[in-house]
Length: 72
Image (cartoon, rainbow, N blue to C red; front, side):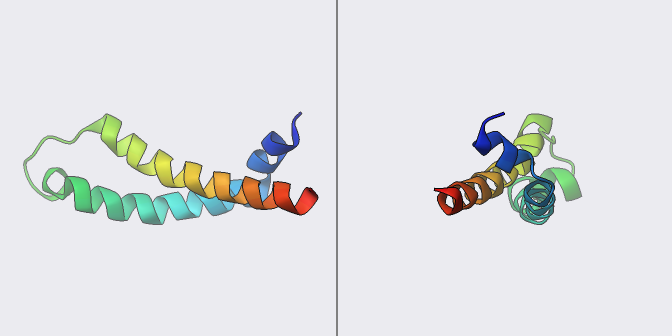
């Protein structure tokens, strides 16, 4: 398995990325789809999922980059 994938799947990386995605994703959902969450507007499920996936991906990328630089 490539080192970058090992780093991305490391338990600490996954937990950290998940926690960050929950906090940042929730804030972004409230900002971007607050009318749908708290009102009567239509909620876009695709946007909702992507809103959580982006901070997860950014956090994972940052952790993997840091780990790869440490191993270099």
